[in-house]
Length: 94
Image (cartoon, rainbow, N blue to C red; front, side, top):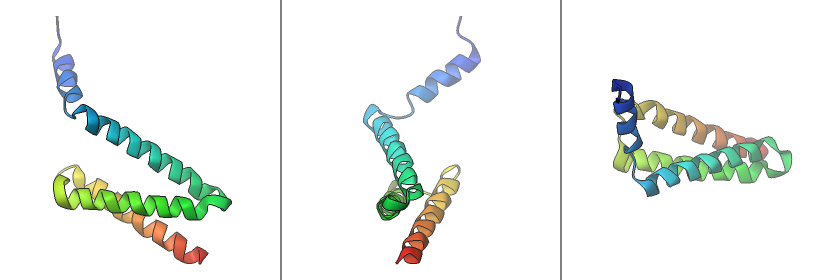
């Protein structure tokens, strides 16, 4: 017998198509990798530039497709903050 919570969970699995699912995982891995690069003194520039590129892509996707309503607004704000922090980090280095 399927419970109500199992029905709710099974609907969430099919929320994203398979290529988009792998894209989200790949983006998360890149964010983690560039975040680690920022912590290593020899690779700060690579990490900051990588975060800048990823956050610009995130902001563009919010403007073009995702929008800013509901749960998307905090995600867009965090992308703008991460972009600003990475730009500030690069300006402090140079």
